Figure 1 (cartoon, rainbow, N blue to C red):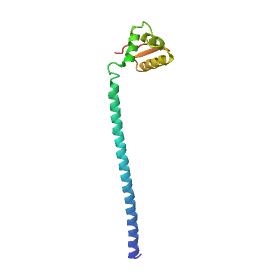
Figure 2: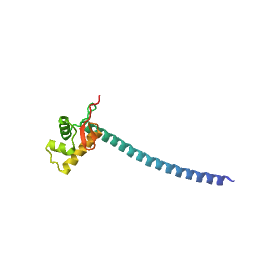
Figure 3: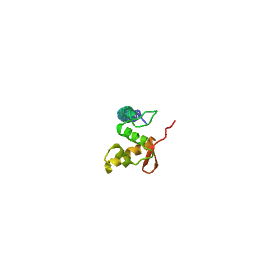
Figure 4: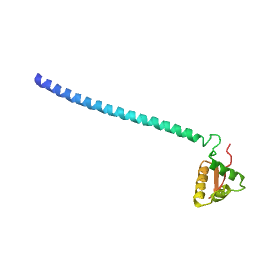
Amino acid sequence: MNLPTLLDLITERETTARQDADRLREQITTLTNELARIDTELADLTTTRSTLRTLTAAEFTADDPTIASAPYQQILDVLATAPTGMRAKGICLALGVEASPKHVEGTRARLKRMVNRQVLTEGEPGIFTLAPKQT
């Protein structure tokens, strides 16, 4: 091989290497921008989670898992005075709420949430009582 041929081969290789380097720099820039976008989204999600926890902290306390909003407290008051468990319709009537299907189902949904949070128990299907205090 002669020197001009070798120099041409080196020039071709340099051109290819520069093109590869430029392509990789573009990929790095794209990936850096994408990473910055995702980092921002993660920070936003962390802020949202923190805000939601702060807002819902008023609904529950660590020591007492009872529900603080008025409708839930009214249900607890009714059940606290009931000698036995009650159905959703009976609780509606005790609260002076019309016992229409809409109101009964809304009350039943609240009762089920309270069972899930271990504030109430449902010993028999549809019969709700206060859960025993946990120590």
